[in-house]
View 1 (cartoon, helix red, strand yellow):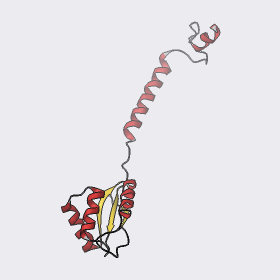
View 2 (cartoon, helix red, strand yellow):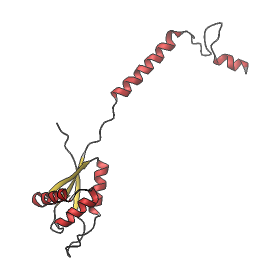
View 3 (cartoon, rainbow, N blue to C red):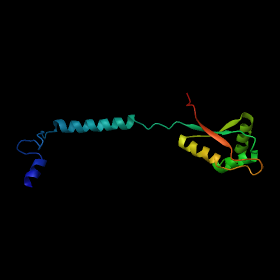
Length: 141
């Protein structure tokens, strides 16, 4: 056991450790400093990239009322009535409207929630929820 302890520490008579490396400061300190600098460069140069944004696009149809759209946007997105009204009008006039821009995973969740919201009880022939899709948002230039 005393031999094992002696091998693990620097040999006082030769100045070498068990691996034959010299115990002087010439290489050890410089290597540690280089390692620290390398870690600092990596931590500052490798910043996390932002996830690309996606739009949740609500699609128009003739099976849902303005009140349904406003109610759905309030329930799923927390939008107040004036914003819901404006988006409902935009969907009606242009055929679609971006209702949210977010990460892909969150956009998929919101699209699925729109699809699962259910039919408009105000219209008897309404068969189901509104449709929505997600599309990549163009990055600003």
